[in-house]
Amino acid sequence: MYHTRTAEEADIPTLYELHQSAMHDYVDRTWGWDEDDQVARFHHYASASPLQVIEVDGQLVGFIHIEHTADAVEIVNIELASTAQGRGIGTVLLKQAIADAGEKEVPLRLQVLKANSAAQRLYVRLGFEKTGETETHVRMQWGGGPGK
Image 1: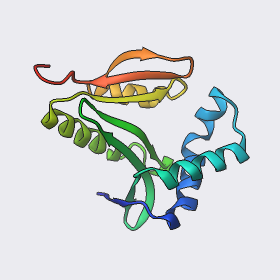
Image 2 (image 1 turned 90 degrees about the vertical axis):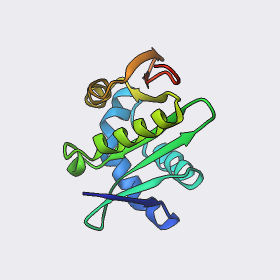
Image 3 (image 1 turned 180 degrees about the vertical axis):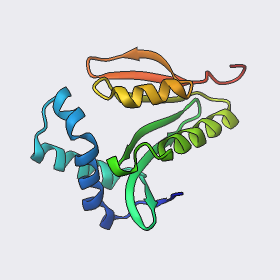
């Protein structure tokens, strides 16, 4: 169905195009889209973060960034091209992260832009619960660690 690999510097331009396609509407509705700012922020983020590229049939269709701490697993970012959405890829990746957090007996946390109601529905369907919010984001969590 798909495979992941560690992102390389050469992937960043394609990853940015994917980010622009997947997130433009949500970012624009939240803060307004400033192309120069988005390019600078994304290139800095992608260069400094342990991103896993998602590929289908040799095509880069997304990326995921997961961080592990002693008390939680956090999905920092997950983005899929519109052509890859609705095919179950995001669900499988999220279920893998849920299983990882379950094995470690820690919660799985993420935050999602309030403007991205489709992602929020997916997270709720997978058992995430709202734990808080900011002006722009909804914080969500799956599980509570040992005993939950």
